Image (cartoon, rainbow, N blue to C red):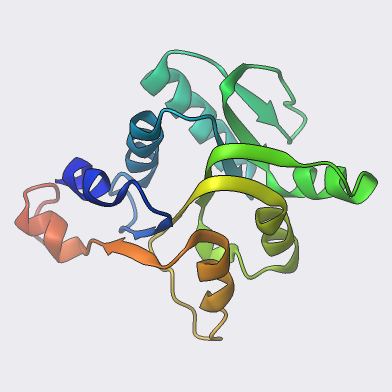
Length: 171
């Protein structure tokens, strides 16, 4: 069902609003596979950097380039996982430093309104943008920056949907 959801909306940019542990990472990797373009994943925590690196290795069978958290490593140029903080520091050193990619994936995109996160996400030139979050709306009204960085909400899946489709056990 999630693959059908991604297939239905993969040729546009937007936010996938999926509950915790529902497969946001897998959906993004499937989307990247369908697009068959280089992609970069932006994260704000070391645990997410490592998770994405491992998932890309499992899903695609190659080691991605990693930028940040003291783990800078050249890998396959088809995929990059990067820490926002490291990219921000590189941009501050060299204002002309750019990233040009087919797909930008912003994990935990509800954090996009933070100054550094927003600046970095807008500095990346991407043909497609995909935001991932369980909660893409905010009480402070700052979701406009999420939509500017990722596009509008493309799909929403609730816990109830996952229970009804047999992915989660009923409480």
